[in-house]
Image 1 (cartoon, rainbow, N blue to C red):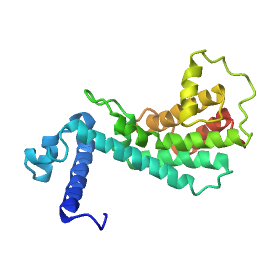
Image 2 (cartoon, one colour):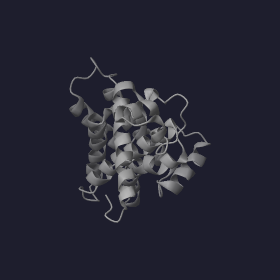
Image 3 (cartoon, helix red, strand yellow):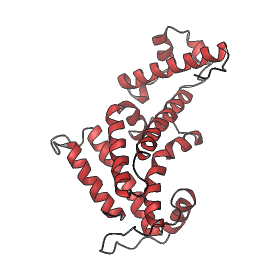
Image 4 (cartoon, helix red, strand yellow):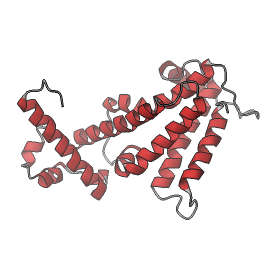
Length: 234
């Protein structure tokens, strides 16, 4: 906590953290749809009216939890990526994938809040976008660096032609995260991003029960397939 904060600011920050912690416990027990400000206040022994001074609505509290969770998985991805040599593109890819899976397994309720079923009546505001793109930026950076180094090689068989309208989407993505990548590379990266989180979600939400027994080795194999599909060297 910042040493220059006043006593009132520190007290507010501490209580805000306690509210979020109680809300996460509620998520684990009842799911995001069951989150209630009154319930959180009751768990903390607070008057219901007091909690509204910190979070005016349930949606404000949900947004805070979503931003925190996106920042946490993003920070984990950035930190582990920094431990791998910049020119070890495939190593960075595997590190990213394994970090996403490990974080999800260690924080299943936060992962479900981000990538599980939408919360009825809740619409995430633009405030969540910067945090939400942190993991995506790490993934895009790997492919972008491969393209810049001239080592991005797609699979040998030609892919089906992209729809003409995809170019507009690719242009927008190039302006944000995927500079220097052609439409096909953008499309492959987008599919790899969806596949990565799809694999983690299928494991975490039980869709692979009685289908796959050795999750880690199967996950690593799929990461290798995705690296080949995207066109990373090695």
